[in-house]
Amino acid sequence: MQSDNLFTPLRVGKLKLNHRIVLAPLTRIRAHQETLAPTKLNVEYYAQRATAGGLLISEAVYISPEGMPIWSIYKNIKENGGHSPGIWTSDQVKGWQMVTRAVHSNGGLISCQLLHAGRVAQPEIAEHPLVKGTDLPIPSVSSSATRISSLDEKGNDYNWDQKSVTPRALKTEEIARICRDYKQAAINALEAGFDLVEIHSAHGYLIEQFFCDGVNTRNDKYGGSIKNRARILFEVIETLIDVVGEERLGVRLSPVSIDPLTKNPNQIYFGVVHSNPEPLYEYAIRKLNDYNLAYLLLTEPRVGVLSNIPAKNNTFEVPETNYKYREIYQGTLLGAGGFTPITARKSLSKGNYDLIAFGRWFLSNPDLPERIKKGYELNVYDRDTFYGGNELGYTDYPDYESAINRGKKKYKLISQSSIGRSLS
Ligand SMILES: Cc1cc2nc3c(=O)[nH]c(=O)nc-3n(C[C@H](O)[C@H](O)[C@H](O)COP(=O)(O)O)c2cc1C
Image (cartoon, rainbow, N blue to C red; front, side, top):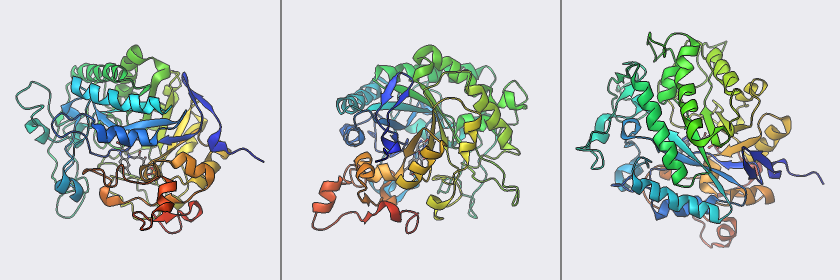
C-alpha cells in the first residue's frame, strides 16, 4: 500500500516533524482583556491541537502596542469581548509559557508568529490600561502617510465599521527601533519556550506596507526600488537571526499578482496595492535563499479572510498559484489557503509544497491530523465565533469520537471528499 504523503516525517531546521499537517496562524481574539496575555482557555485550545511531532503556528502575537489593532467589528467581540495577545510584558511571557508547556507535553512543537500591523493598528489602543500613561509608542505608523482607502460605499475601512486614520510615516532612523522591538519580542518568545519564531510579513501589515508602492511613497533607502522596499524585511531577519538563529526562524509572505486579463490584483489585503507586485516577491523570495530558514510560509491568494474580496466564493476549488515560487526558493515551503485533505495530498505529491497549513479546518477539528489520516468526517466551522468571545467555537469543537457519539450534534459533519462542493 502506498504511504500517505501527509504522514511522512520532515526536518524543519533542527526540529523533527512526524507529519506535514500544520496549524496555520489563526487570530482568535480571546486573550486576557487587561493583561493581553494568554489565559487557561488559550492553553486548552493549543493543547487540543498539539500532536506528537506536529507543528503549530501561534496566532499573530503583537510585538508592541504600536503594532496592535483593536478588532471591534465582529458581533461576537462586541457582545462577548476579546483581545489579541502581545509579547512585550512579563505577564504575557508567562501566559505563553503555559501554552508552550502544554503543547510540548503533548509532543507538539510551536512557532510564534510576530506581528506589527502598521497602519491597520489604530490609536484606540492608547486608552488600554496597559498602555495608558506609559511612554510606549502608539499607532498608527506605516511606511508613508497613506491612509487605508475606503472599502465600502459608507467610507468604512477593513470590511468593518471603523474609519482609518492617516498613519505617521516612520522616520528613517526609526526602522532600527522597529527592529529592536522585533528583537525584544523574539527574546521574549524564546523565554516563553517557543520552538520557532515567524516574521509575519504578509496580509497587508507593516512589512507589506513597505513592499507595496501603492502605500510606500518614501524616497529614502526604504522606498523606491524593489530592493529598498524589501529592505525592512531583511533588516528584521538579520536582527532576529542574532537572537534565534537562522534555523529557528520562519517567514510568512502573501505574494499577489495582476491578472493579465482584468488587470486587477488576485488579492488585496487591507487596501495594500502594488503597481507590479511579482518582481518584488521574486526578489524577496530569491534573497531568502541567503538564509537557512526553518520555513517560508506562503499564502495562496485564493483566500483573503480579512481582505476586501469576500470569502463567499468557493475558495476550495480555485487552483493554487504561489507554488510557482518553488522554482526560486530552495528551503522548506509551507503552503496555506484553501487546502482540503485531498488537495493537500495532491499538492505534496506534485512537489508544490513540503508542508500544508490548515486554518479553518484545524480551527474546527482539534484532532485534524487523526481525522485526515483515518478519512473521518470533519466538524464544519462556525464563522460567527472565529473572533472573540469564550469557549464557544474555540475549545468546544469535539474530537471525532465525541462528535459521533453525541445524540444531538452541535456542529455539522462533512465528509472530506465533499469539501469544495458544498462549502466555502
Ligand atoms: C479566523 C482566522 C484568523 C486568522 N488569523 C491569522 C493570523 O493571525 N495570522 C496569519 O498570518 N494569518 C491568519 N489567518 C489566515 C490563515 O493563516 C490561513 O491562511 C487562512 O485561514 C486560509 O487557510 P484555510 O483555507 O486552511 O483556512 C487567519 C484566518 C482565519 C480564518
